[in-house]
Amino acid sequence: VQLQACGGGLVQAGGSLRLSCAVSGRTFRNNAVAWFRQAPGKERDFVAALSRSGHRPFYTDSVKDRFTISVDNAKTTVYLQMHSLGPEDTAKYYCSTSPSVIQSNLASQTAYAYWGQGTQVTVSS
Image (cartoon, rainbow, N blue to C red; front, side, top):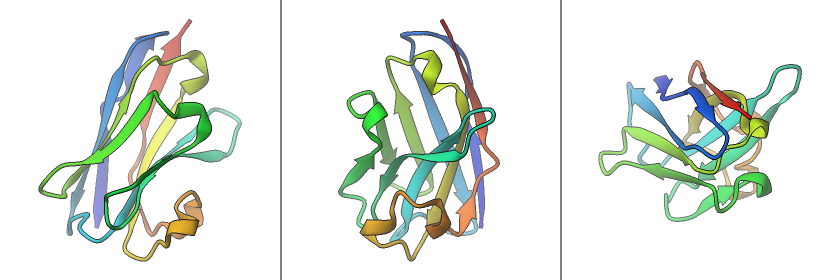
């Protein structure tokens, strides 16, 4: 299983970006999917996740109402649509997936078996 993330870049504060993460070797069907991010000098933090059913998204408080996680109908690409970006969103963003994540562990990076290489998002003020 390989995950390939893309879509990062440099954007001004208030702008938008859409990150994509394509899976090869399997689909996201019946898998939880998530985005995490890591700012320089900080730990990797949870951003958003979709449970295995794909029906219920979960977000960290700081991105609620600004970010949306979704999966395409083919279950091969997960997206993170980001609006109203601020400098505090600057980080490297990682996608992840696993077939065995229970709902209470969706925000735990140790629950995910597969990770993408990350894509850098830089927001200028």
